[in-house]
Length: 210
Image (cartoon, rainbow, N blue to C red; front, side, top):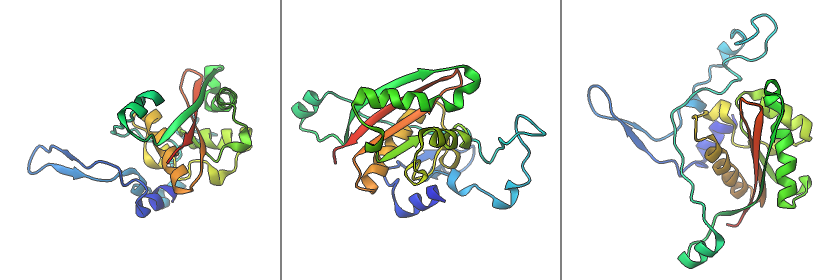
């Protein structure tokens, strides 16, 4: 619902329209993410667990799908921005990494976030919005519980389960979504975090400037 509402309100208006060549006929024009509208509520209860067939809770509905996608960000020194006469959208206050046993990778963002906050000299209470990448829904849910986060301030435009998880661009996607969320709520400090299948996680703290 969050992702669909965000698209309806034009939050993702900066998405670039692309043309996809077809075997026959004119190219297919894609101007919006397809994933937010692909949910079929009637099928949710009928889906079987993906890993543990008898007692598992991970299904295709609460796991991110693999999507095609691309993202671009411009990162530069403050001195370079001043010299070029450009106004930064945000600045990086700090970042951090953490790791633990690979089997526990889903909760590693809860270890990386405190490292990033300390590096940024930011208190947990100062963070207005969190963006936690959803390899699975449980990643966001577990880390919200461990970090004692307000659910209304996490993945406010939906996460990777509803938007998609293009391999290789999710870092840029969650930072971009975090900035858009800060701008939409006229907020200032945001933290984005992402886990990886090897047991590691990374987090970054940004400050919205405009």
